[in-house]
Structures are given as structure tokens and as C-alpha cells.
Image (cartoon, rainbow, N blue to C red):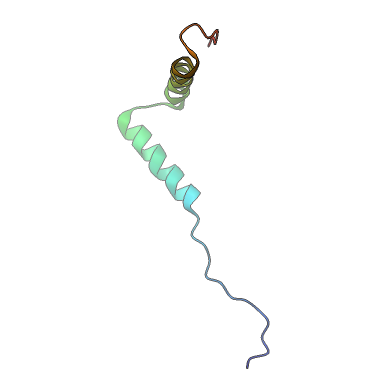
Length: 61
């Protein structure tokens, strides 16, 4: 038996940087800006809230 107490694991591939690059490339290809995504996010959040809690829920954007 080897007296070496080290545990050698293969390096994990970092996915976030690659996904970020791919997402940015898609946004560029489609002509979508970050501001567009954020505006759409607020609209979608309000639609989901109204669907869940009703049209007169009082949530304002």
C-alpha cells in the first residue's frame, strides 16, 4: 500500500464562464440587449403574479 495520503481528483470543468460566453453570443446574434431582458423579466414577473394572485392584486411595476 502507498503511504501517499493525497487524494487526487480530476479538475472540475467550470461551466459558468462557458455558458456566459454562449449566452452572450446568442444575445448578440439576436440583437437582444441586457436591458431588454430585464424589462421582459419585470413584465413576466408581473404576469405570473397576476395569474397567481388575481388581476386586482395591487402589484405595480
